[in-house]
Length: 176
Image 1 (cartoon, rainbow, N blue to C red):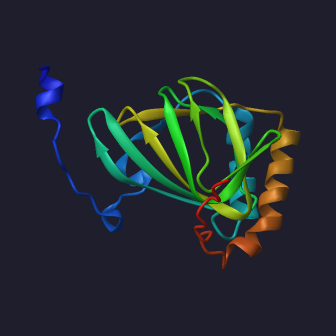
Image 2 (cartoon, rainbow, N blue to C red):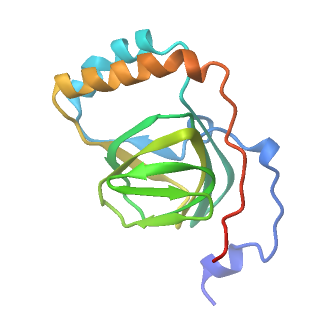
């Protein structure tokens, strides 16, 4: 048995109410160079009166983490990568990934350094993110300023709606 295996708890309870945000736990670092996005940050701040996302980390230990994400209706998650494998499970709501719409009970896997993005559905999305590490990076893929301008407009238009929006209601997937 390895040292890592002997240090892992065999049973552990965690409380969602005690979960720190991604920012508070410091487990995600921003890496890479996205000068156009950096230049647009003041515009994003001006455009959004209400946050379109919330995230926390209910469980974290060496070699494993679980993040809980809530994106409000129409929130556009930019194209980005992580330096680790990620497994996602949709608890409630939906996401649009390219031509696919995924809903409650669906999920997806993303390998390390594989770019992906999605947009939260009309009711928003609550999603669980499982990782085989307790710290990871995020590298947002930069795009032309004009494209970031369109994202700012989407967020500006949604901001008033986001102000009073609640998480989506969980609906069990239908069995066929």
